Image (cartoon, rainbow, N blue to C red; front, top):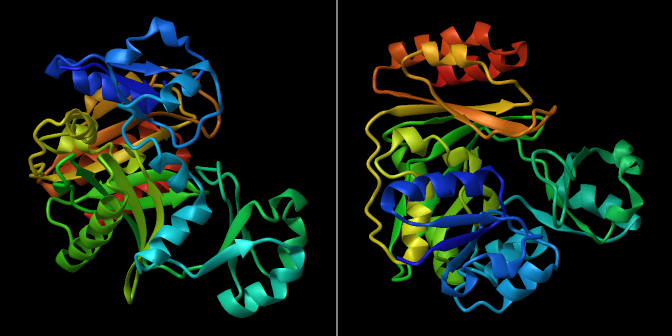
Length: 354
């Protein structure tokens, strides 16, 4: 089996490597400044855990690698302008939007999009960074350099947020996990809940939309699609051409994790429909020191990234899975006194979903 080089050596690359070990597959998460001659690049399949990267000796070599899967798709989806244009091209529902090119456009923006505008940098920006929620009297707070480098969307009064994680193989076959319900606070994913059986209508709509995107792009591997729930159906918020934070529950809640599924897809291995037999909850650990007392809970699986703990930084996650909802709720509630106070609301949200 060919080795896999993963452009990017953060936690996603680490978890891809962990998923590969039982299969006897060598995975090399590599930083963008790595020396190409130190890696088995010529013999490898190339994938990425990041959508954007600067030009370095490594990325210049990879740019011409014939086995760099999805190479030309990454820049298209990393730019929110071209990502939105793709959704419009496919007639897929998304929040009304436009390019924000000049300050003089604001009256027309609010006239067209409504009283709340969501400004997003075209490239970069994640976990709430590079985004602004603005009303008509707040536009002066937007930095001047944003004009021409941002899109602006209509603020959506959504009922909830869900994501769909799916995969497409080289042969065009697709498989999907059940929809995941997500809670974001200050733009950062805090908690996810995935049921073995999702709402049938929402699941069907989401699978249809993500299938259309992956087929149009001839995409291979795992892709995640974040959506708003509205009374009219799902609206696509953003796409991620990679394994995704909201799919971390699959490590302990599905027969095949999103990380193994991605490796199977890019290597041309079998892509069976993952089996999900129970409800799963994922709690992101953000700027929080590790506490091994969490392991006293029999349902808790700790995934620690061994990163320096800093405010706002994702340093790990906890997965819990059980078909017995009262037992799952009890395990979640038992974590509350073992975590900083800011986790209580996210855990209460998850318990309420059960």
